[in-house]
Length: 219
Image (cartoon, rainbow, N blue to C red; front, side):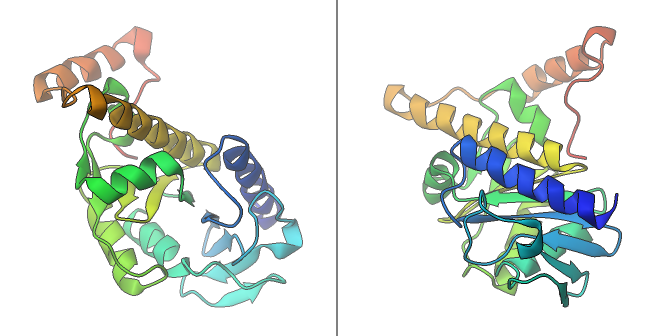
């Protein structure tokens, strides 16, 4: 992938997530990794209004190489995930309402629906730390180390990665939906959590010929 393609993917993702209500203004950040370069959204700009020249290109050490606007304050977070998960080629992070609400009240989003498996299972909530800090990056990596491709960030929002930007967006959108379902359950009673045996049965179905393209563990 060329950097121009990476820029176009980031711009398209910003418009997609904004259209789906996951991004309000400049709340959130996106990136695509191309080799040892990362295209990342700028600080303080509405993500559905970003143009190619606004995007920053940084190296894996966080050095700002090109771009008219300063890169997002969450550069350390994006780089930490790329370093921890070599299969990650794109990252999406937003402050969407559902996931942010759950991040303020829970320590884990349990597998209440079989599609949790698309994210690797139960989604953990990274401990709170100041935005843009090294500690926040470390906390998110710790949450992802539980074996998922997405995490919630306490009192902050949600984050997901994928081997393509489309996959990263799909995972973030799924996480938001799961959080919405969880929130809808609470007034009705404690949500029933799928057992390990039930999840194993789902994985067996996915691995059959009919569902060969279904979810895998985080990758």
